[in-house]
Length: 116
Length: 112
Image (cartoon, rainbow over all chains, first blue to last red):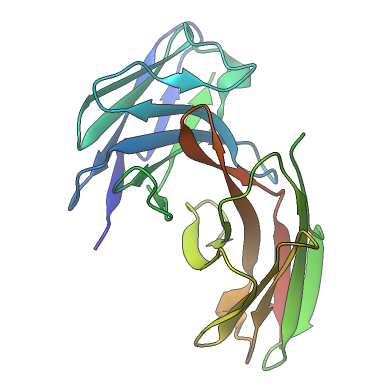
């Protein structure tokens, strides 16, 4: 199998606070993990790619100081939204691949973030 | 540039067949994926094409023509539970790794 979990599944926070989202590969080692953001009725937009033990690669327009990514082990990547604002409210989804060059990305169930 | 086009919405009748088209223009190509996404949930993998031709998997089939930058997803014997968004995604190699570029998705509504 290839199961990816995310925690929490949803979070509500006040503007200005930081929120950490965890992405775990449960039954495989994930060389690469991806973080996406999806606004209502829109498609997934890749935010960054992280490889275990190295710095994340951010897509153009994504602030690396605002969206901190840590990929400390082969089964865990975290995304921290720092000083969250209402416009950061979105559906955050992670995915993982088993090996470099592996075709299929396995997606987590997503985390819905609402910033008040 | 990167551009992936697919229809925004489609409707079909239970038991029928529907074809969802996808055209793409990307700076690199290393495979095309179709994902299904129900509202509020993460995408689930449906199919993968890297060579030209048709890949069949149960009620779902996917076709690819690399020379035309074209793919379609064919759903047969439609069921109500097939009502979902269908995402076309192209995998390209950029910056030392593979990454997926997603289309906006096609929302399919299956009615009785």
